[in-house]
Image (cartoon, rainbow over all chains, first blue to last red; front, side, top):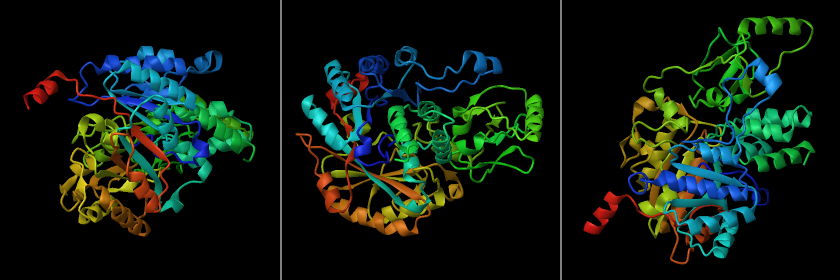
Length: 226
Length: 275
């Protein structure tokens, strides 16, 4: 699956978007993988990932299905777990994705992951020049690479570029363009903050690869007509 | 997906949530789902929070507020009454869900998601070898969707160029004739959020295949997200990027397998020793 590969934006607009993930292979190295995946997730905490998750585990952002009037208006919403809470809650993960908003965090995390020598496949999804630079620093040799060649076909049907920058951060397409556009309108009208809008959208990305930091930055740029 | 009309209060919050735009407010001022447009991705059902308010008092409140020019408006990601209603899906409609909802495993491959792990596990599977390129054509992404009749057409074009389809990919599993790229006809009128055609070609054939895809573009009624992969050499360099740049494609964003995986299941290790 290519759920982290095709993120829309210029190289400059993807300078705060680094995804590192670990994945087991059924029948090859899945026995005992659960413990290794948890160690991977624990090691990430030091580097403050902005989102994390997997389709098999849920993410930092989870919708509350048992809200009530009193909970909503007197307690408030509790739909974001801390990374530590997420890691502690992991049960039978088949993999886990970590999203960082700076290159230094990715570099430090990869150094630790290399030292852990977990024996599962680890991938990075980001700008290729940044990946090469960080791997060189950490003496990691690239094994395989998959390039994004962008969007083709009837591209006139695609939404405007600001919306695409946001929605393509969920590669499975679970974040609708209309909802992202609604959030942009609400932000510009001062009806919702960029932070809150990013949280609303993140709940729909079931793999936890929606980069809330990048979304907030994009929203702030759009808000002022940038 | 359907809307439980007994619960819906017509707040319209679910309307923009649908990635396919399949939800709308009907003549009865309550939400409805256009079943033809719905791809059963469950994004609305799973992603929206639910406030569990009683529908009758809320409808009454909405009418009172509307008469005063005001509006009952819950937060935009909430269904106030939990009116979204998943339904049992029969074949072939059930294929919409297994392709569109990333948490549901495919019946045919037992893998969740829209393709295989591609090169994400290439360090242990050897799916794409040196001198080969993995061609990953995702139809319908981002956010447009695709009917299998169009997938069939693209598969047949690729097959005519001699590609080898990935055996474990769920689209390949729908082919009646993988040599010719023919998809079974009973799914032609089913629409999914996206699906991935995975195939392999020799590295030297990459420019020709990219040209084939370029020529396909004007006839497509949907979009393609295009990816291409290869195995790096002993120094971690890859010959693919130069090929892509020479073919007129930009290639600055990538997913990279760092080669940290290894075979560890005891039975597989035993088999390797024995062989």
